[in-house]
Image (cartoon, rainbow, N blue to C red; front, side, top):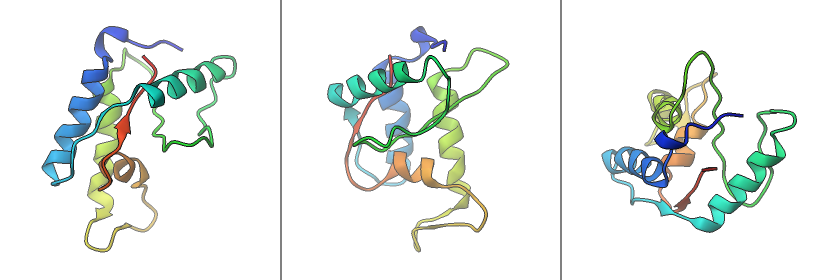
Length: 118
């Protein structure tokens, strides 16, 4: 697993999420070191098998994978935010046969902490 550390600072994660949250009138998130420690621990559990699966742990998770070039936090957040087109805010539902859970996880109404493996 390769992480482009220079492009994945905590402020990158927080700022990109908060830009999207602000655009829909949702309170900002802040970095949470406890969640970051858990994310780092879980990412290390997957190094041996590279399986892209949720931990089943105490925090909501958005997973992201890509290939073909060096990826950044902006690529991950864009992929999740792009699900917005399928989400109906009024009915709090996703269009049939579409995925919206990554978008709603990042832009949910309840203020929350944010973290990623550094």
